[in-house]
Every structure is written in structure tokens, then in C-alpha cells.
Image (cartoon, rainbow, N blue to C red):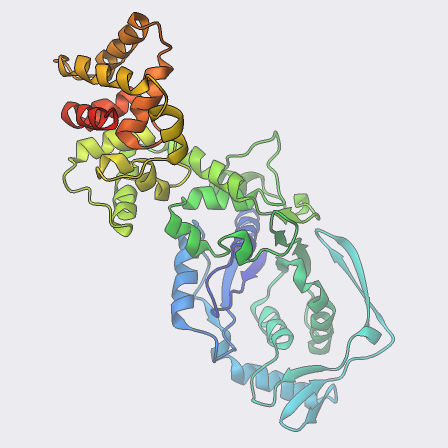
Length: 427
């Protein structure tokens, strides 16, 4: 049976690169009918924190991932690491240096691995110094405890970032020293920033938690990360985890670095938003409105649903809703300077929208169709393009040059408020 593992360290939030590694391990395990184990690498007792672990587990579940069996904690296995190190000492394969235990590296030999993604990679042990396996403080060294755990748990395939390639020959030496079966290795190229540099804060958010807070959907995030280095073919860009499992093959992963493109992620997320029913978006929208302190209590649920429907195709994230629909929640919104100069300050425009407001006062049936008809009648009467009324009116009611359909916005805003704002802006 295939057995893989994902091994996060609870010294920080779940990094996007780590989330991608978790997804690939999950896909491989589920597509082969195998098992995915979760190992918590918490040997650093100073930096490891419970809050990070809780968030990592929540984020993995949020992404749609699960794992088999209970998580394994390295902090609870120190006795096993010490026992394995003592056995190597007894066999003359290691030596003491003060309180530390050091593994002897045999010099002058080649180590070759047949990496599933990169192909053959060769190392020479002359370039590897003797390895600390138990530190002077009694804690195990990373490479050593990884091998102890992977061998003990029967891991058959190690799938991780290619920043671990240099660790591989050291770990192979430990497998050999234990007489353990060697797993297959697959090292995924790292996810880089758009500029080709290592993904960092200067590229934007680097943790799953940050994107979750911004209103990205888990399906969209998983979808985007799946396609960094792997393709289902046919230029397909929208795929669920369940669909990917049916066609995923580790051998199909690219050996080229992938670049994280926030705009592509936003596009992917928008595709999922457009497919959502407004009722499904409602609780998420309310949560985001509350987060930024936008009062929506005066709106009925029906009105909120209409507003969501109006902006659903314009949102890249649910977190953008409050800003896009700002004019529906307060009257003291800011006016875009460029739009004010271009549309409200242009000669004749204020007179046109003032007349528009006068004609709208006579309207009995306040629907977007009737509002639009009046707008186009005025345009024909005054020999104008409809846009010469539409753009300044949009500025008057929302302060923005772009947004949802103007007449639909006016209908939802209500007759009294819409006319009041047009009159105020036309002074």
C-alpha cells in the first residue's frame, strides 16, 4: 500500500507552498488508494505553538483535505530517537561529542536517487560532513528524526519541495544504517513569486490563513494550487479536488518552477463566486461586512440577496463586497477625484442629471427598466449619448466610475435616496 505523509511544523501559519505540498500528497494518496499520514514536526519546543498547530489543522480541513489515523507528534517520540541513536553508537556507526551524538559519514562514495519529478540526481559523500543526530540539548536533528519516523511509519513515497533535495543523500545514509527500506522520492519545484524570487511577504500574503481572511474560497485556493506544476490537460483551469483525484499522476508534474500569480488566483476565485447561489454567499458577505464595521442592519435579507446578485459577477473575493457596494450602506462615501473631474465637472453634465432627477420624480413604478427608459428619452431629446447621463449619474449615486448596472443600482437604492444624491451632486 502507498503511504505518504505531510509534515508541517507549528512554528508559523500554513505557508502556501506547504499547502500545495499537502494537496499533492493528498491527491497521490487518494488516487492510489493509499494512506496520508499527518506528522507534526514540533521538536523545536521554543518556537512551536499550539495556536499555529490549531490553525494549520483548520486550514488543511478548510482546503478540503483529510488524513488517515491520528496525527503523529515528534515531540512525543524523543525516547525513540534516543534509542535509535544509541543503537548506532553501539554499532560503531556514530560517536559522542560531549552530550551530542554524531553519525559517521562514509567518504568517497556516490549516492544516486531516481527522483520521480527530476529524474536521476547524483551526490558524493565527500561533500557531506558527519551528521549530528542528537543535539547537545537532547533534541533530535531534523534529518535523523525524519528518517526514524518515515521508516517506522512505513512511508513508501516522500513528496516534498525541492529545497529538500540536499537533505536526501543524508537521509539515505540513515536508511542504510538502519537497514530500512528506501522510499521513493519526488521533489516538487518551489513556488516562486511573480518576479522569480522565493515567495515572501513582499509578494503579498504567503499563508493560507491570510487568503481565507480576505474572502477567498477553499475550492478556489485548492484549484489554483493544484494547477501549479500539474495540468489535467485540455487547457482546463477549473477543477475540483474530487475531479483531480481521478486523473492525477505524480509523474505528470513539471520539473520547472511555478510562479504564484495573485491575479490568476483572484480570477479563479471569481469563477467560483459566479457559480455560487447568493444564499450561499450571504453568511460570508455578512461576516466580511461585520469584520470591516459596515452596518447592514437596515437592509432586509431580501435586499442583501439582491445586492449580492448585483455584485456577484464583479467580485474577485467576498472581501471586496463592502468596498464595491459601499454606497448602499452609507451616504458619506468618498468621490473618486478623476471621475469627479471627468464627469461631474464637465460642462452641461450637472444640468443633464438635474433634469434626469426631475423626470425621475414623476416616475410611479420604480423599476430599472423604467429608469433606463427615462434616461434614454432624455438623451434623445437633448441629442446626447446615453453615456453622457449614465456616467455622471453613477458618480452622483456611488462616487465611483465603475460598478454594477446603473439602473439596477438605482432601483435597489430606492427612489428617494437616488434622486436626493443626484440633486446634491448637480448643484
